[in-house]
Length: 310
Image 1 (cartoon, helix red, strand yellow):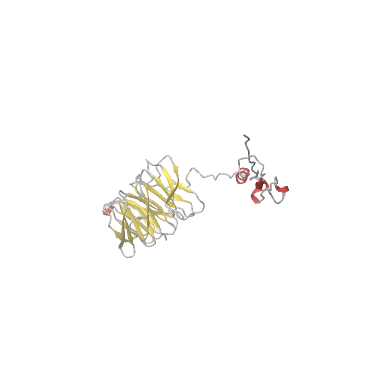
Image 2: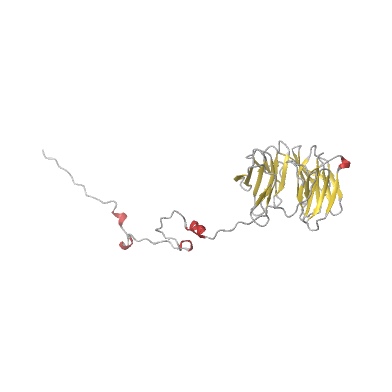
């Protein structure tokens, strides 16, 4: 018998892929031109982008030289060597307050004059923290007995006293006329210096409160504790709005960036050694730096995006 085969018509389904309105543009390539590609060839085999090439070809910035020796040395006998105390603070009027045992001394950087602001020997107490008010007129003094005293630096007189803590006061922070104090009793107290009235009592730390710092806009308060936690508070809530637990030692060093809103830096103690950066707008950790030793203090430069640590 004879087999019959039916031949199907052939159709090229890929022919449409080669169709073009202008056959002369099939292998034509138009290189993109803009301000960033003026000296960059599209056929270059370099793995670097135009921006990276410009960066490598740009002149190298010279490092700023920082003197390794101090320009001024002040004699401070009986200055307590205690990680948890804050015994030195600069005022906005360029006056340094130093707590030495039972006394607080003021050194005027403009005139080099030294005056004694107060003496707590008659009260059998010692100074554990000092902090200038924003305008530089008043000095808050925290004591070992848990008392916060407000002194007028222009008259050397005590204006008000808040004996509300049950243990030493190691951290102080001003916000306008209100003074915030952190104590070994684990509490943060807000007191109004105009009315001698206690406004708030914040309970969030499980151990001693080591550091207190207000944000530049005075809306957020950061607190560090011996419980290795960094807390962020606002002015309306009684509970912290953010809790950071990445540190593995006491958090005393705290600093808000004056250049970037919501940027917070914190430093850990001997068992931690890290400086950590936080975005408080998103409650996220940004990066960390191992300093090789405990971080006692942090301060941002007001003129450049630089941070100094001790």
